[in-house]
Image (tube, rainbow, N blue to C red; front, side, top):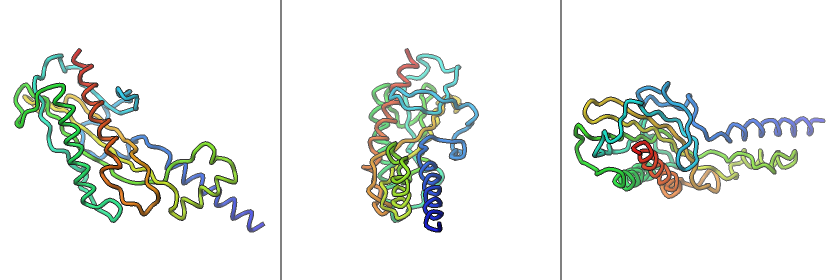
Length: 223
């Protein structure tokens, strides 16, 4: 009887833990305060097919901007390096994000080093870099394997998802007015366990996708 109760307790704990970790969607609790007004955001589908939270001012006119200025990406709030996510990883992430954005933004408008009245200002922030246990696969919902999945999570041997989130503000170069906002989260390469150090390489595919979606979204608005 005691063994049965322990198994049920483990089963219940595993279900709660893994279900909580399965959600990769940005929720209001994750908003950082970097953006001007989160109440404007609504769910939309990015060109890549991913769901994002975004808003574009209806006042933005086609052809309004002829150049674009990219502010250096930053961590918001300030980063707290750890053994698994060291400072080298954090700086590598922002460096790569900037490079990816420059590459894509330059395809839609000329990049400038100083904003002018006809400039679209892009201010990106990385708001989350983390690793969390992967959610349950469909076959792991079987009673026996669910317990095994819970044990692997508890002992740290379960694969980990590399997670990263961003908030981006778009501003008018003449007035400083916010004309668009984006919030999104992505999952990079899987980590082997809760000891593996997360590196910029683990999230590069996410950063490339964000930059590509940004360019394609802006191009669609200009048409």
